[in-house]
Amino acid sequence: MTDDERLPQPPTADIDLVTVLHALGDPVRMRLLLSYADGAEHSCDPRGLGLDHLHKSTVSHHMRVLREAGVTTTRVAGRNRFVSLRRADLDARFPGLLDALLASAPQSAAVADVGAGAGAVAAGA
Amino acid sequence: MTDDERLPQPPTADIDLVTVLHALGDPVRMRLLLSYADGAEHSCDPRGLGLDHLHKSTVSHHMRVLREAGVTTTRVAGRNRFVSLRRADLDARFPGLLDALLASAPQSAAVADVGAGAGAVAAGA
DNA sequence: GGGATTGGTGGATGATTGTCAAACCATCCC
DNA sequence: GGGATGGTTTGACAATCATCCACCAATCCC
Picture 1 (tube, rainbow over the protein chains, first blue to last red):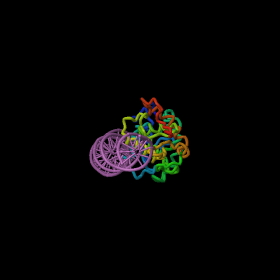
Picture 2 (picture 1 turned 90 degrees about the vertical axis):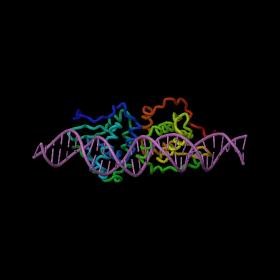
Picture 3 (picture 1 turned 120 degrees about the horizontal axis):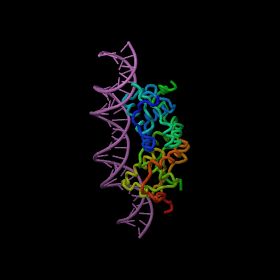
């Protein structure tokens, strides 16, 4: 499960705060973060996340930025990639940051802004 | 004191999380944030902040970005500008965020040479 | 194998952005 | 008035970035 192949990502100690903030300082990536906040693994399919207006490659680009910043991890399983939040790593490196962000974000990054959020693709499944 | 003229800034309710994160997703502005974390008012002089390598207009630009994002407030007194953190506003809008940032930042945005707290400026000069 | 599915790569392009330089403006002080 | 001081504005320029498009790569299923 969790020991599949993973796309390259920075080790926990190398996660840089400014890089993380830069990654999250974009409405699309903030929207992705909110989706990943449920702790579940998500496919790369942006449908249902209110990002239908974006090209697939654009979403792919944003997910890469999040991963390279250390925000997410991507597990490769067959032709699917399962993206999830590196919550433990982020909490260890920046205690309280993620909680504060997730508590504050919905007010500023309302789903209505980007579209209707139908929820996680793989959440709970 | 605090009712001098102030440069334009967004009202508290309009401070947007993504905009704030975008503003802080830059090493120079993160450095400024750390300087302002002492709660004091600071002149626009970047000397002593480890930003000596930057042109003054560049620093001015970064301070404008911070102010327009709602991170700082600027009081105009004579020919001086006194910049300070909008800590109460930020805490009200994003509880815990600033604390988490300031607790985490020094690890990532360490400044090599700054040994003097010459950043804080007494208004009575 | 052949086709469908899932997702990424690379190029192109327009928009932001970080930076410097020089000019400018307001204020203080002699 | 005339400098000197503190800071902003404007313009220019290179770098980064977000986005789209067309094509590609790996995998699953029949």
